[in-house]
Amino acid sequence: MMHRIAAAFALSIALTPAGVVAQHQPAHSSTQRLRLTATAYCDKGKTDGGSVARRGFIAADPHVIPLGSVVRLEVASRRQYNGVYNVMDTGSAVKGHRVDIFMPSCPEAKKFGERPVIARVLKRSEPKSGDTGATRR
Image (cartoon, rainbow, N blue to C red; front, side):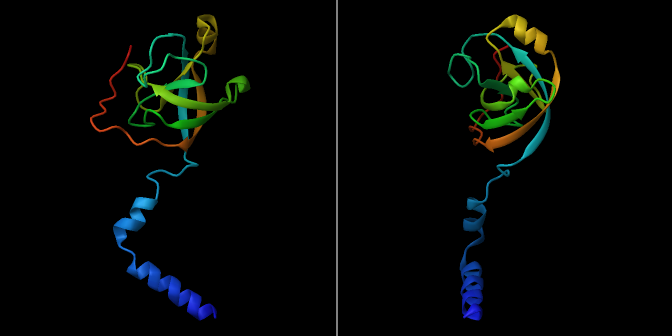
């Protein structure tokens, strides 16, 4: 019985076109961990994602984490900021392995300063075609 199951599995793999297998594999693992540098901003304007900035939003370099992605941030030195964030914005200073966390209070954003964080990508959005990483700042 085990030989039949193994043979059927091997046959199904052999008959599956390579492109089909590749389409079902995510480009990046959903548990991808990134070491980033985090800063904070308090500009309540409209984000590149089209929404008004609010708590739970971050800005990121779209070449590292595309707009619309969902990440879990771990800020070891400031655990109150640990949580799930939506990448809804970009910024001219947000290049490479950096994120900018929205905070409704400018004094709070200034106090946050610059800190190392670990980001776990929970949902990676596909970059939009023609996305140049245009910035709002």
